[in-house]
Amino acid sequence: MESHLSIDEVAKRTGLTAYTLRYYERIGLIAPVHRAAGGQRRYAASDLAWIEFLLRLRTTHMPIGKMQSFATLRGAGDSTVPQRRRMLEAHLQDVLAEIEAMQQSAASLQAKIAYYRTLEQSLASHPTTDGGHANEHRKPLRARARKTA
Image (tube, rainbow, N blue to C red; front, side):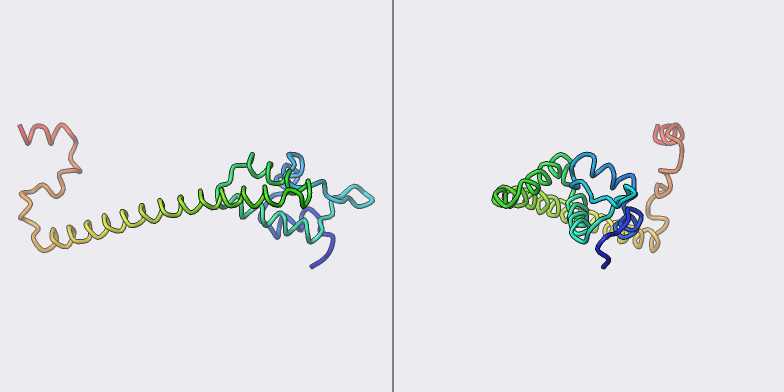
């Protein structure tokens, strides 16, 4: 990989916009980027690797404030390694809990889909056994009220 990428090249590689890259730099998520003689940003391979890690944190729904705290600790050097590790461990626990909740929700959706498939098959094989109520949900509420009255 080239050692000094332009902001447009980094934007294409990461899927972020140039605006977002400048914003990340302004709020401290990205350390000030080296500038060429004309003032254009030139990103090193290490900058790109850091941006890719930030994208992973964003994918796991880490709040931007926590990302900023992590970036500040990273910028402070190796003395903050234990703090960064603890921060990532705590975030990982949040991510795993969210995955578990999503898996439970997915299982619930699968069960409901299976129920509806079975119900559809039952209705298709016995279309008159429902007393004409299968399509009742499509009627206006007033029509339903009159029918049941």
